[in-house]
Amino acid sequence: MIQTRITDMLGIRYPIIQAPMGWIARSALASAVSNAGGMGIIETSSGDLPAVREEIQKMRGLTDKPFGVNIAQAYVRDPDIVSFVVDQGVKFVTTSAGDPNRYCAALKEAGLTVFHVVPSLAAAIKAIEAGVDGLVVEGGEGGGFKSSREVSTMVLLPLV
Image (cartoon, rainbow, N blue to C red; front, top):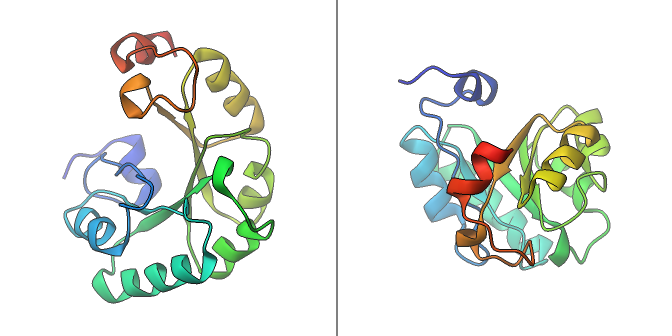
């Protein structure tokens, strides 16, 4: 076990948070990460909430460890995504590809821990002002679609 503020906050053994890769981060991958001591994440990029519900149910059969869900705002089709995630009993959410103010307050009011994915210093400041619990600093290597300026994580992380 590696004890850090992240491991204490999330109840995980290692400070590793799996990337919520669209169409890939489903229960099989997320449960393997959670079972290994990290934080597995189920993606919602498909926008198909019944399919996401099924993945969360599968997840509960594959692990008793903490896991989270990502809300990729650019792909949200259902305006009730927050209540959906809360109703599933999820305790950790990453938000990405959008404004951190959009869902942060509602998620935190429901008692969830919220991290936001940021591709720039300006986005990090905005996320902190929105009240997130943590940041995922992602350079252009993470797909680059969240920022028009591809800055590598090695440059971005010290800046943030």
